[in-house]
Length: 229
Image (cartoon, rainbow, N blue to C red; front, side, top):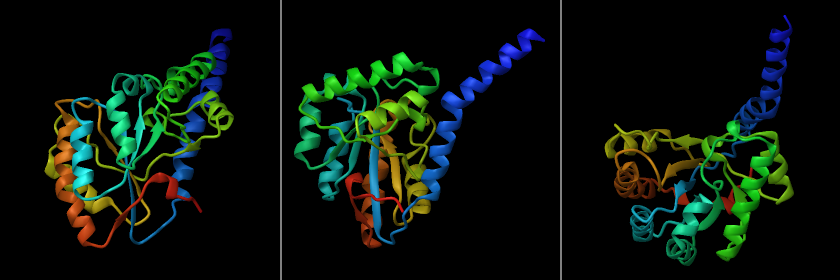
């Protein structure tokens, strides 16, 4: 009985610390979605990547699209030239953690250190970070404390195309984007990580989907223009 109570307390603490905050903000983000018939917010996670991000930037430049990049700080440190290009091309840079670790597995001290070290890297790169997206959209109470402490705006998403899957195709991603996107949506895609060169497939899909969306009258904006209800 004693062991059962200890286990129950541990489960309750974990629910309060991580699972409930994550679920709450994900649900509320859907509820607070601000509809707009013609605006799309393209966002990209898990970069920058020396293998993929420049190719993505080329496609965005081709169609004069501005997007928002949620960068892993350690990857940004390894790809300073790409960070400079993202800025030069007029895109927004946000934070996507230090090493892409899940908040469910991080205690208070590790979470605080993650934010502190991430921001030091970004500051050293000359970046003034205002937006934060946690890996997998998962949060804990320490994450929320740091978001408030550093005056970040939490940015999640409304639409995904499962572009990280190893067996997906450019056609699959294109179809999902065209079918799922509605005006006012924040769209989450990836310019880093992924299996079997997944970001290259995402880039190929975007090169086909973007002109179709433009032809339908959609306008692409960065997340600094996004306001919840």
